[in-house]
Length: 75
Length: 421
Image (cartoon, rainbow over all chains, first blue to last red; front, side, top):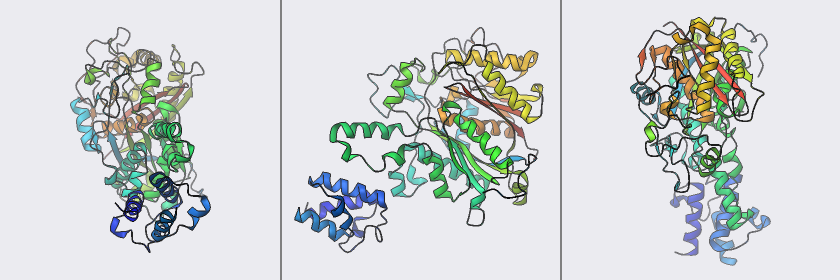
């Protein structure tokens, strides 16, 4: 499974949305219905899956699915 | 919100809807028919490995799908007790045919009882901290654990924006919730309330904790006969789970919208034992004052009570002391009052008990049927009253009382009256 597919899978699972909705330009809050607690859990899940430590500042900058792809690819 | 001119001690409170999620079934009809047939909802614990535990039995809710009652995402991030509460509340509101919207939502409140809250997520979180560290704790831990997320989620999903409260008086919580909800309507602070009790704690910490107190039955080889209130062979209670919710309303409010009235709530008594952390006082002092207060509050005399839904936990002490207390309150009349413990079938729902048992008491007066005390093969020598053993009984009931007593020495009794159809 590619990194992007892994990220997509986590997002779909944590936000209880269909994987087809998890497109790069989708915003977690506006398009995928995430609230503040969902975002915390989403970040935690990515940290665990990819063994990275995402700072609060970086987490705040992650607004869309593409932001998450880019972060994971660059770290 | 307080509305001027709405406060009056004369405001009458009626029940217009019921919702049940119990070990005997999902829904009022399923549960009530099982109760009247004398079926037990108790079996082996399936939720965790009980091999090291003294007690391996409980009354679990079966075939419950939270997604039938909550959106998928919400269903995933709630504990069972919250989902049970929302499910039972949704059923009760549908049963009452009460439309809750922007125009009346602020006049509909929620008061529910919950003794322990989300123990399962607490256990998971404690393990997470130990295994992975505190940074891996889910942000949903606190929202999933706190007892008042039950009324909170009921409010969120049903639009009831009046007073929103959770009562935490252990095994009396459900009854205190219903009594307090009645008073909220009498005081004019709401026109309708969603009220009852909920619990779901069939988890290792709960079973180990009650086992340490020697409070639970260990009749593991015969689960369906383990809860045997008032019987000589009783050896403790059986943990049950589920939720019982009622819609109660101010009488004129119910009449004005043409609601079907199931029963009237006429009496509420409360007391504290001031005696011991877990044991009721041997002379039944707290229970006596509680039952008497409920009868007085109803403005009736004890001879007018036609049925008592007992606390009847199946512990050696409760059943004996409750019997003594009933004898003290009812005097010579005590042998004539039919008493039953539905915990013989549902197990003990702890903070949820008062919710389901108030609902059962409403159904008893409405349907003219007293559910039995099953497994009463050899009554205790000192438990010599009419416990409606084994088989349900038809009887015309006008007034019925439901008792709930909790650890800490806290007591609640409610008096329900048949509403003429």
